[in-house]
Length: 384
Figure (cartoon, rainbow, N blue to C red):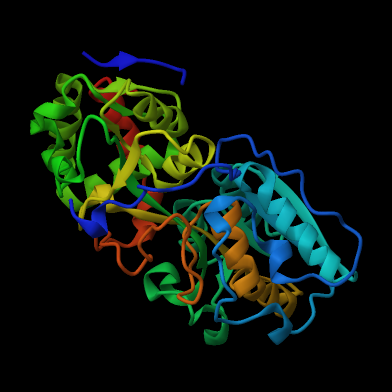
């Protein structure tokens, strides 16, 4: 029977040991303690983009396209900003304003799925108002891309990002989040975590000791990926078996990760950055992180951006997206949200493997947009 709660292997698969505490990050669905940079103009350096705290003390001066390599951002740009990582993306826009006094981003901030539907409705009515769609997830981008509302971007904008994360060049990933298994290091070792998420129901150590957040969008994307990779019947069986195992239900994945750190759970399912967030605040927490391999449990989703077809500011819009892929912006995503950078020249924080070292399933991220069958399946088995 599922319990519901609302409150708090070897080298490549075991990453968080030894993390120091003190840093804080704003993440999707979580409060962000960073109050934002001052908006006065003046010289802005890489240090202004970088977060603070022990996790970033050893950061270097990394390789890749720099802001100074790009044309100035100048003029008004209407941005549909979906999600916004708890408001912290607005802080990045403030930094751009400091560098470019003539740049005027006009932001409509709402959930990504809502903005995707707005774009489709506007297109059906014969008028689209934004120049850029900046979404927290690939699924919302895919929904809009399927209606041919994006302009393919130039190679010089997207080429530094792995091709998986710029399908058809219609949109490009700017920050990644990996599915992971936070586990309590006092209860388990890395070798106790199966390499495949499909083997979790048969793992005795997880009986009445594993947590999930089925109402959370990231978990639903993971189950959607399982439907794509394993098929609906196998996914249904997995959900039923996990309930039989005694999976405990939480309202979000930060609570799952905290429960693991507290020893309330042996392990859980969560995006990777939640464990980093817990460890940044609680350096002595016995919390480590494992990744499965090649399956839905190893899914990597991305926040991404696209240029809207019909904009009369296409050059500015493309330049803005390119700015999101500069060393400075990628360092911002890595050190302030603990996201995975999308360019190889900027490493992730916290001793994580690079995005190229992970082994996600071979699926088209655009398939994550088909979430309704997932929700129906989860309702059918009583998970939702």
